[in-house]
Length: 612
Ligand code: M6R
Image 1: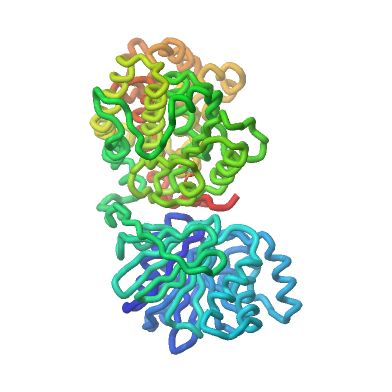
Image 2: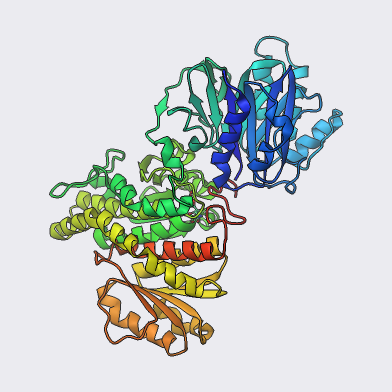
């Protein structure tokens, strides 16, 4: 999805902007551009294609300006092209704008501006914004606040979601920013300030951030920042220090972010566990305030998310139902928000989102709140949009996840959901304390066990080398193993472009087995001792129809004729996905590498899906 960077200070803006755009490449984009103020004129350089293309443009190297705005665009309105790339300028070239989000009423605004004599060079929704600003600027009262008031009047006309950054040749000392339903942060430096849609873009310059609220304006100078509410009343704002290390958002010698993030899982899980529990003590969540009275009357828990986060929710459901005996349902956010789900004040809704910016998940949360449910957000990104909407926020603390394919975020979400289930069970006082104590001990052992799984990466690599040319693959499992099958299949699709399906093993005979023929690859996850016999029978059914089988298991299997068995350490079934998913993450990774694909930036995908 689109990315924004801005700089004003004492350095040359271009390298800061380009560097920032490079850090945002992971979000997915198809064009890039910058605008700076040079000799009192706005110079915009933009085109479709990669940020690297921009850097090679000769003119860009001669720009010395110390104020600029920049953008990576993921096409929504109009194809990727130079004209449609941001920044967009108004007709008089006094204002330059970059914008993330979607302006829903841009047709009507374009019509209005056309009648006033404005013309348009692009097919984008964004181009109305600089022209609207110009319109209000030239038709408003002329005083020192004229620029800010013109931006505010223009923004008042917009319907939709936006993070907007504006620069004017008449005001070379400031950048104005505003947001609604799309993230924007301001990084504070010494005699310089930064703007970004995403913290990693400017993390190498500062760890001190202002997180802009919806409908809040900021006027950013090199030495100062002024904040205004929606009525343009000025207010003060507190700064947040972000603990993330700048190097955490770099590759640190790994070939790809995805591989690095797979290997970061032991530490990510340690951070997720943090001080949330110790052996012999009850779980504690300082971040939420849920009483026994409240929890005892909850008749339904919804877990709502998209993609991988939804798969983590499925494992969370199994833990909550097992430990808390509260009926729990998992739904895809884009379905949940439109199907009039049954929600009331006795419903607890948990929304999981790595980025905290997924449009459907946030909309689903707003819906739940409007129906009086209590809402909890589980996210990885501090201050992300979802945290402002939810009653409570719990952070996974997995560190920045840059690769589009989610890995460490998934395992940390799963751990967090299981800890949350234990916490609820302890509040309710209905759990078998010995069982929970054993589960806590098993969770604490996870980081070491993940390291053991990672040591077998070469075995998975060899299997991937054998099958990477295939066109279809199938993933099977029962219970939590089925949840992992869903995740393994998604991972394979998104980075290797191989068609794959996942099925609950018991469903095989109800249709999918018709697809099994000689040489088809079937990957089975088999970790639940109670279901091992049944699962083996299902795998035998595909073996006898000629399938090539990879089995990931923590069970001792004898007398089986599977092609490849990957042994992983044993653990409690409630948390087995954290170990069994890792071979599947590696499997997808090595398949994509064998196919020479861009693992971190798969085609058509964006890291955070901030539009519907
Ligand atoms: O940021 P979120 O967790 O809300 O993102 C949800 C999905 O878009 C995300 O998990 C997606 O499915 C990943 N690319 C999967 O690897």
